[in-house]
Image 1 (cartoon, rainbow, N blue to C red):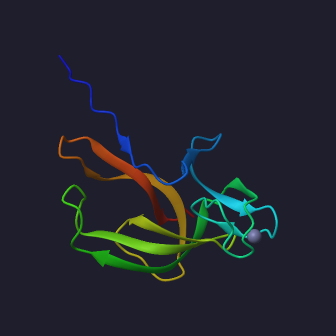
Image 2 (tube, rainbow, N blue to C red):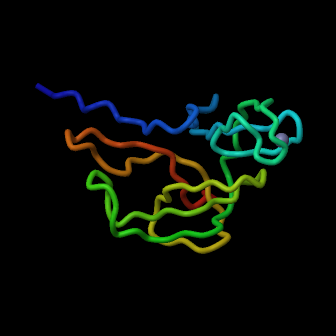
Length: 137
Ligand SMILES: [Zn+2]
């Protein structure tokens, strides 16, 4: 008799920041200021540019380029280690801090959004969140 595998646990990002597009691909939900057009991720209730509170949720582009990254050998006990994090400049100019999936990275390389397991809870449940990986060509 097979035991069902545990349901993946999706990390709770501020403002329900991770969604799925109509093609089943992950998409980050940030925001756009309806007053000045400033775009940000994650969602913020006040625009830091013009102080407007007229903020609308907006899907972020799934592609960008790697601005910077580093390899971390310490972190939560439940995360795979070492792991790589970095800043990604999305194609709309928004800079996002994220886990990266892969082993070889270069500054300015094209990357795309994905979802991946970054560890397991103490009970063995997969911890799944948004990541960026080398863009498929
Ligand atoms: Zn604004």
